Length: 142
Image 1 (cartoon, rainbow, N blue to C red):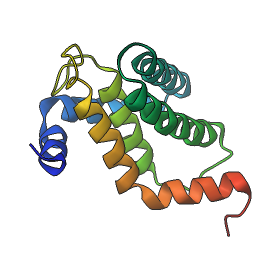
Image 2: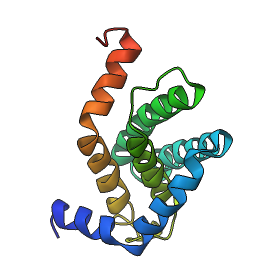
Image 3: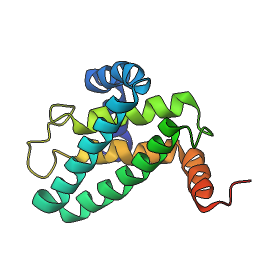
Image 4: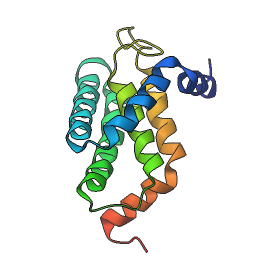
């Protein structure tokens, strides 16, 4: 199964559809989103420590960036991101922290492949949003 097939299957899965439904409810609740971010960072660090340092490191870096952007959005400091992008980020994080998804996380080696593919897809699909956020952080956003 190539990466594109995996992403398509994950996005069409009942697991991601469920995460997307939950995301809209989460998005309006700052504390719930902060807890979700904490859980996602903890899981990414656990993956790095216990399972796969390379994949875990990539996940931790990506989720750290997501966390900074969502926290800035929630605090009102950064509003230059569409609501639909925030909901998409939250849906991916909900999917990521769930151990039972398209490819269950307890399966050795392949269990996190769908999670990693989805996070990479998110960064690819929201490339402009992330570039704007990083420019905003550096103070170079025009």
